Image (cartoon, rainbow, N blue to C red):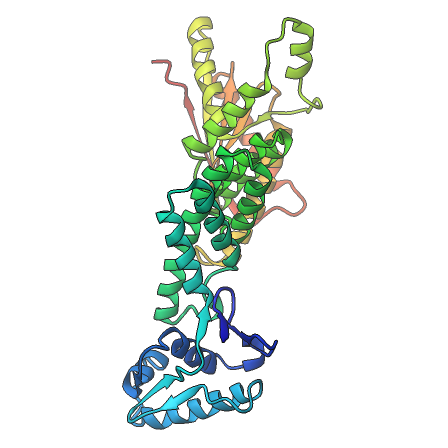
Length: 395
């Protein structure tokens, strides 16, 4: 029995301990050919089909010859680990995996476990099959060779199943109070797909269920920054609701106001403006509108936008300039504004600022000062700053 691993990288092994890894093969073309033969081991594959798969853009006059040479290299590679065995059979105009050597493939085993979990009526059986499935998944299918269409299709298909399995398993583990396992599964999933927001929601629930509120708070803030940095988007309602629900649970009934005040104090008094995530900023914005209506004072909102002046948009140089500029601008905003001003990150390249009790002329001077302070840095990022001011619409 041959065991084939396709998740993360190609590796063949048998019961005796013999192995052949992608690193040992040292050829992408040989790896592609071997992987395709294993995935289609129950069929004879024509020379034309293999040539189309291996050289989709090549119009060679002799594809059979090129394939014959590649097959020769594959057989020699296999014989380095299994000298006597003949794994590949040559037919008339076709090749196939030798059926005398049965193969267990991790992708197929993974899918089988997931399907059994979906059809299981017993909750424990469903949970255990999902656990086995997600632990079998080590990463996307042959990521180093994902430029091949058939590999990319497999990768997308199995990764989608994996994400569904993790989410379904998280719900099952949460319902039975197995929060440590839930945390382990979610953390591993986030390592493999850090930009899938639902996974972060699942991990937050695991932290909260395991009474790890400090870790939950830290992870929530890290996730908000991650979403801004990569997508320029605000956290979803679900993510914000999970965090707000946790904050409610933290506060049991308390009659001593001094205790509550102590809890409400900032951990450490910080000079300058108040920085918060967008959900909190919205609440402060609503509060400032009410206060301005009641007191008849002017409140201004400013949008600060950074435009990198180096590299093509989307290039690593462009992103590096933008990330550096955003970090420096955040420092300048917090240090240059008043303690009553509020700042949040609005997108990949923008900040929002609330300037309460500030007439237009003063607000304009404040933003000009921000501009001056940024460019006064000894080493400022290569970006152009643009800002706009608008009085809050009290209606």
